[in-house]
Length: 154
Image 1 (tube, one colour):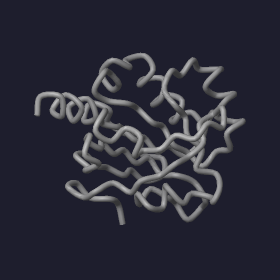
Image 2 (cartoon, rainbow, N blue to C red; image 1 turned 180 degrees about the vertical axis):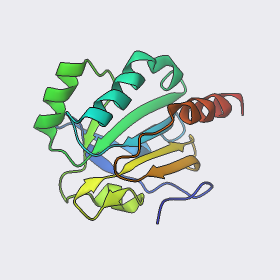
Image 3 (spheres, one colour; image 1 turned 90 degrees about the vertical axis):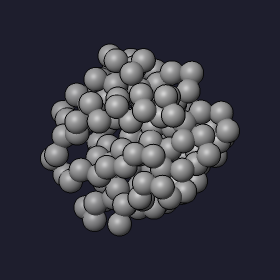
Image 4 (cartoon, rainbow, N blue to C red; image 1 turned 90 degrees about the horizontal axis):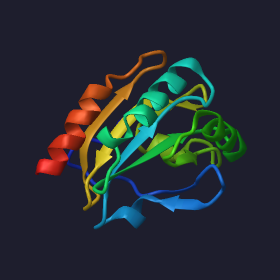
């Protein structure tokens, strides 16, 4: 079951592409966080989605909101993908224990990969936007933009 709007988001600490730990709780009281789960680095739909974030980063990440992208890929794969695509937001590895954070958010497929889950978490750690798409279902990033914009005006 997916994390629901109005609930407190499960905290996590995951290594980024350079193996540095990143904790959701480190943003509490400072920035909202847009957590974007995706199945696989280097795959077509995931590359399209994250390149769209990269190309319109100001709509998703600014002085009030931080993007954290999460997959079950190992950190070296994320490092290579970030370098190849020029991503300027953290790619986090939910590789081991395999998918534990994806599972906590209801964004894990029994096949061993993250689903396309998107969660906007406010500065108090409360989920303000949540959606989980099944395998092969691309997301509508317009809904993310609206959620981020609404949070900024709240």
